Length: 144
Image (cartoon, rainbow, N blue to C red):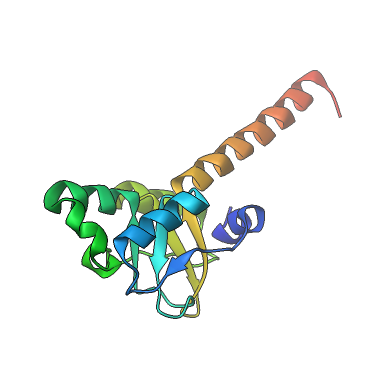
């Protein structure tokens, strides 16, 4: 299965914030959309970085509540690992496991076209297993 198949089910909407967004505002965006990460982008089409709940928690632990007034660029990850829509889900699962990341932007021709989370991957895998189970059950029982 390809990343484009996951996006077809999940949708391609990506929440982004501009680089000058304050961390306090970022926290509100994460809460409002009930998400764990956002892409940092000056134009909503390119990936300048990514910032997650984990980044916020680490910064709060290290620097205290004053960090909330800083821009997201003070805590975001600049070296973002991305995949293309034609990449295989297994490839992305390996990337997530090896790099210990939970969100991967999907980029086609330099343009942001989706974001896949570890939750999306797990849901996809469960759906695949349920389909296989149903097919095997029907085969064994002689069903249709």
